[in-house]
Length: 205
Image 1 (spheres, rainbow, N blue to C red):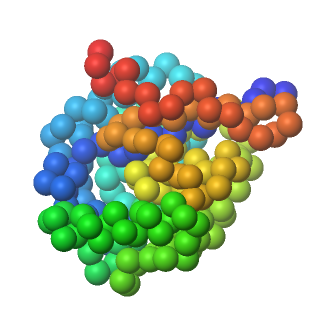
Image 2 (cartoon, rainbow, N blue to C red; image 1 turned 90 degrees about the vertical axis):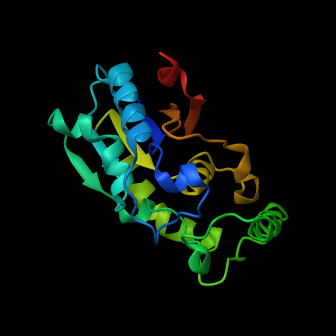
């Protein structure tokens, strides 16, 4: 039996990314010109991988980033369970010095294991993990050998922690950039291992 490979990518750049504006599940922003170029470069590097299915979140920026694969006729599925974390009252807010201090305070809460802590009106890591597990189970149950998944930065960190059975308080070890790749390969025991981490070689071609 062939082992499943999950090609996990973050969406391409948006203007919110460029301007340093908080962008979670409450902001359904398009990718910008740079993001479209990143998507094209990733497609050129991986278009020959025989993907059986592609998955994206319910936010348009993820679908746009892998649209060229969908245009090939590869079946595509929307998984809202993989949506970015909600940043609540801070959605659409520029990261000022004050906002950044609050953000760092929140990250420190998560790093010490307070995973129920959430920004006002937003989601905690535990809340995101609870919905995301359902999406991960669906991807793993997919009979396809090669699947492409496009999602979001913080959500990727939670996804990787869950599928690799890492403690969520250590999720910041999974760094990311726009249109980076994490390649996961199934082992004989059914668990997954990392083959590529935050890989952006395709963006430097």
